[in-house]
Image 1 (cartoon, rainbow, N blue to C red):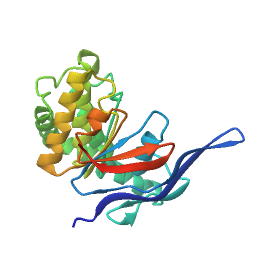
Image 2: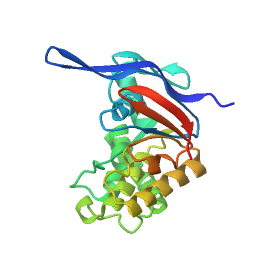
Image 3: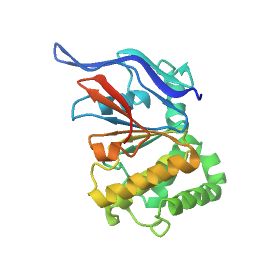
Image 4: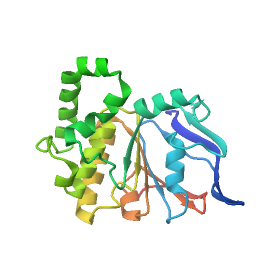
Length: 236
């Protein structure tokens, strides 16, 4: 039985609005095994994006813990968390967050530019470009290397965002409404790509969505309601 790749313990998150404390997550416990594709579903405001941000160390919990391979990571020093965000986690979002002034290839290479000192990056630039081109071929964008985001369709921008998330060879992919900005057909293409990555590379994927049809394509579903886990179930 594989151990948990990533998990949370009694996770709570609240925000202050003036004098008022607004609870978003209330004691959430969730886990994913290595290589599992897990969907988190819920209505807008249920806390699912907040949960993903906490698990990916983009934010810190008010109470509780985030564990990676059984070790707590949410309380590590800032620099260590930066390294984990860059090396362990890959992120894709509903609105892509591609840099408009960069080409597709340059957007994909951006995480490696951030990871390495400039001299190291330039010494290995050919190696990194080859890796980026290979990943872009894998996601069906090998013919769009020099195009800028404004020249791409929504589906192509999401594919570029997935390639950018994969360039650092992450262990865990965190996907926040990856099909939410796409039409049904294009959204299904993105889901097929994510499922292929999960099947072929054993990539652990946690995806949040409000769409039950999308969620059902994962291995397992967790439903959030008002910041609490409502149900856990195998996907249909």
